[in-house]
View 1 (cartoon, helix red, strand yellow):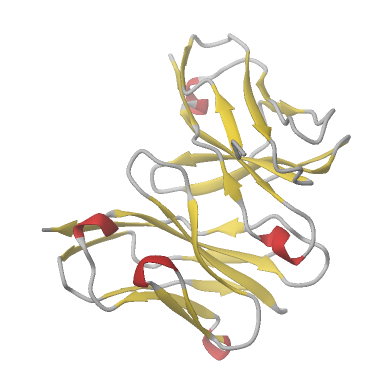
View 2 (tube, chains in turn green, yellow):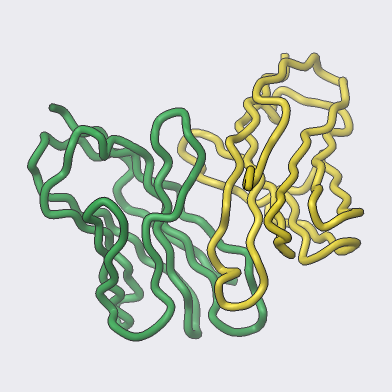
Length: 115
Length: 114
């Protein structure tokens, strides 16, 4: 079975600082990878996803993530965060084959951005 | 489209009471699932369904039942509520095919068990 590890549980930044949130997964085969975001009081929504091709994927609101297969990582980045990026961020993985459609989520990273 | 809807938004139960959390989607998605979200624990899968009439257990199924009689609805039943079931519950759906890997979440139900 697959698993996901998010190393940063809480991150506090000032506006305009750069962001990188770590995500590592454990699975022996090909995977599909996702980042979801949960703004305060709201439900989860998709930020970006990787299925195949260019390992650098761009999502909404200036976020991007890089898939490094050799490191089993899918880190989320943003060059300059805003106060409105305050949210909880979840990394998720689904095996690419075998007909699975149910993701395994990491424990999440809480990001607070100070104005 | 309303997307994924959940009712109620908030609920307070006493230990031992039963209740049903409702989840409905109007996107004709085949896959539906229930997660609970607890501080520091992320999202944990309770039950899921790959189509009408088909359900299966997730990571933390004990104390919960589900059924999927229609494509649209996927209710979660708490048989005898316990304080450990205090949590925020999210329902999600996804279509089949490659696009089906993206989850669409409902707004959540916040449950307090006293």
